[in-house]
Amino acid sequence: MADKNTITVELRLRDLATKELDDFERNTRRTGERGRKSFKKIDAAAKKTTKSIKGLVVAAAAAFAAFKALEAGGRAALGFSQAAAAAEEAEGKFRAVFKELDVRTETTLAAFASTVGRSNLELKKFASSFQDIFVPLGLARDKAADLSVALTALAVDVGAFSDRADEDVVIDFTAALVGSTETVRKYGIVLLETRV
View (cartoon, rainbow, N blue to C red):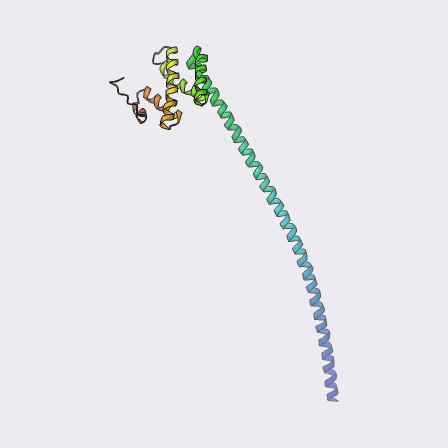
């Protein structure tokens, strides 16, 4: 009987082991299914989050671009207003230093500006600088105006010949007129006190 009992115990143990293995397999499958479902949910949530982040990045980039465009527009508007203010100031100085000769001088400078392809406003600034020196030195306003126009034309010619900016030549000529003659030596102009 021992052999029969041994066989019965073995069969029962096998049945129990098989049942336990079946339960384990079922539970493992359920756990695997739950895990897959959880991973699918996590994957879906990650995709939604990624999509949301991409949308936020695109929106942030668009907002930044709009800000930069507004900033550039603001700078351009500021630049235009500063240029307009500078032009108005130059016109005011021109009228103040030329007084009743302003129309005649302006006409002469406009013709010269057209001939040499320069800005009329720039030439008026240059002539105003010279006139502002000559009149206080005691020259008659009409003679000073003629000399201012002539020196403006000379400065443009010297600048073109020397490959220098007109404004730099005018600054150098102005310095020479008030006594700093070294500034015009680079143009081949030597002014000595004994010769002047």
